[in-house]
Every structure is written in structure tokens, then in C-alpha cells.
Length: 468
Image (cartoon, rainbow, N blue to C red):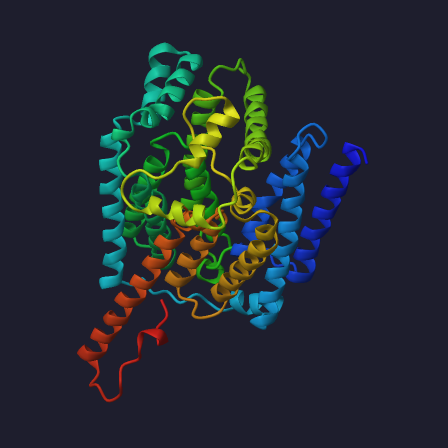
């Protein structure tokens, strides 16, 4: 079989599998559930892997392709099993979910102040982090460009600052903990406050939401990482979509300009980092050249860079003994303060020939490193079941604004999962802790209101009966 036939067979099989999932398992639901987002995120990686693989030139490229295909088959099988076990009827239950109006639960009181306080704390933590690393990427790039007028100089500054904290780890203070505040909780605060803008339409709420929007953009771009601001923007625009978001009936005929403003600010940040940083040394001058170069760079980043890194990583992973889960357990030590084993750093140096950077393994490489073919068969099935289980629970239950927003954002965080530690790094664990904290606060707040206004004649409802 020639290389072209081998690749074509894999592409056709994968395409059939995705279509089968969409039509037969998902029943044409376009809502961004955890399972839908995970499948969607894997498509460009698989395409890039097939296009870049050297089937007969590199020993382990075919293994990488086949493990992704087999893993996806089992992932879809796990999803179908969850549907059957939980008696989930996708189209009917999704329609019921979208037809139900979202109950607004952010009128005021202790819970609202908890949301605002969380945003303030996140901003304080972010500013401490910025002071520790000692630079602000957007300001540094603009200052350099205004002083020199050279995009080549800004590219040097961009590259130097991006590796500064890796060269000086003593200045890189608790980045994982900091990210939970400025990348996870701060945007969540903005999303929740935006729902107040939609419902109450008060000037103070609009000002407060705008302040937190600026904070999200500022802290999300302070190190020049474009992915943070891209994910924030996509999440917010999807959340506020009447067609694809959970708050469609709450939004109704509101004509808020905040989503458009968010897209402009975030898009401007992305363009600036791309032109002055990533593409600073290019000769593109006309608007069309700049636009086409940016699109090509984005396509290369999404489709080819990750796929290439994982193909090369597979060569390295094959030299390591199977971890049988020890690596996953060991990686969880990264949650604790102090240094942790840095496999991603080793892979980056192996793939790109040295330097400072991060090249984490994806879900398929991680499974292979720990369990080999046995894990490729078992783990994706369990993962597919759990992702669909979470998706089903998100569509069932109470539909208050807080619950809908938190679970919606959590689905986007699960899109990035590749090993247990990723549940912490992507913010899923943080969001779940916040979710249960919100339930407790709202329970006691409602209990206090009952005591204040109504004589107690019946037992108070337990926490399990309350919905956020």
C-alpha cells in the first residue's frame, strides 16, 4: 500500500467516524457540550498528523495515526454507552433545555458580592504576578515599535520576553495558581456580571462589567500568549449567542454592544502580537499581505505545529518504559508548590533542537506513554463516557444563570484535557470548586431570607435540593 493510499484510508475512516458521531450519536446538536468541543478540537490535530506523517520514513508515525483513529472509535463508543446508560435522547432533551428560560439569580445579596470579590482578588493576584515577572508584553512591544519603527526589533523583544521567565524561574511566581485566578476565575466573573447587564440594563453594572473586561484582556495578554485571549473571546461570543449559547431566552432582544467590543479588543490584541511578535521579521506590508500571512500563520499553528510536535514526541516516548499510570500520578505533584518533573520541556528541546519552551503531550501521546495499546483501547472509552456524562448533566437540572454559565465554561476547559493534571491546569477543578462554593452560599443566603421573612414551619431544604 502506498503512502497516499494509507493516508487516504485513515482520513476517510476518520471522516466517517466524525459524521457517524454527529448524525447517529449526537443527533445533529450543535450546542458546545464537553463532548462536542473535545471532538471538534481533535479534528485539526488528526488532519495535521496525517498530512505531516512520513509513513514509511519514520517508524512510529503510522502508530501515531492508528492510535488516534482507534482511540477516537473507542471515544465515540464511550459516548454512545453514556447515552444508553443515562437514557439520554439528544434532540428532545436539548430542545427542552433551550426552550426553558434561564432563571436570573444575580439580583444582589451575598452571592453577588462573592462574585465581585472574586474578581477583585483575581485582579490583585494578577498584578502581583505581573510585578514579579517584571514586564508587560503589550506595552513592551508598543514601546519598542514607537521607538524604533522596526517590527524586526519588536520580534526580538517578543522572543526575549517570552523566554525570560523560563530563564529566570525565580521570577516566575506560582504561574499555575495565578492562572486559575486571571485565566479561569476572572473571565467567569465577567461572564456572570454580563448577565446582569442583559437583564437589569443599569449603568453601574455596565461600567463594572467593562472594567472586568479590560482586566481580562490585560491579564490574558500580559505575557503575550495569544491562546488565552482567543479562548476567552470564543467562549464569551458563544455564550452570548442566541443560537449556540445557554442564555438565549435570557438575552432575548437585548442589543448589548459588549460582545462586539470584546471581539474588537481581543482581535486587536491578537493582531498586535502576531504582527509585532510572531511575524515581526516578515516583509508583508499591504493589508492583503498582512491578512493572508496571519491566516496562514494561524492555520499552521492550529493544524501543523501541534501535529508535528506530537509526531516527533512519539519517537521520544517510544524510548521510555510504560508508566502504567505512575506518570499521571507523579504529574499531580505539580499541583503542590515547588518544582515538578517537566516532560513538556524535554519534548520541546527534542522537537525544536533546544531552547526554552513547552511542548506538552496531547491525550493520545499521554495515553500511549502510560499504557501503550492497552490504554489506547480502554482510556478513550472511559473518557468518552465521562465527557458525555458531564454533557448530559449540564443539559439536565436547574437552568439558573449561574449554573448554566459555570457548566458552559467548564465544557470549554474539558476541551483541553489530556491527562489528570490537565483538569487542574485547564481550570476545570477550579470551576467545580467555585460551583459548589456558590451552591453553599446561595443555600445559606436563601435560608437566611426564609428565617427573616417567613416563620419556620417545615424543615429547610437540604443542599442537594438547591440549584445554583
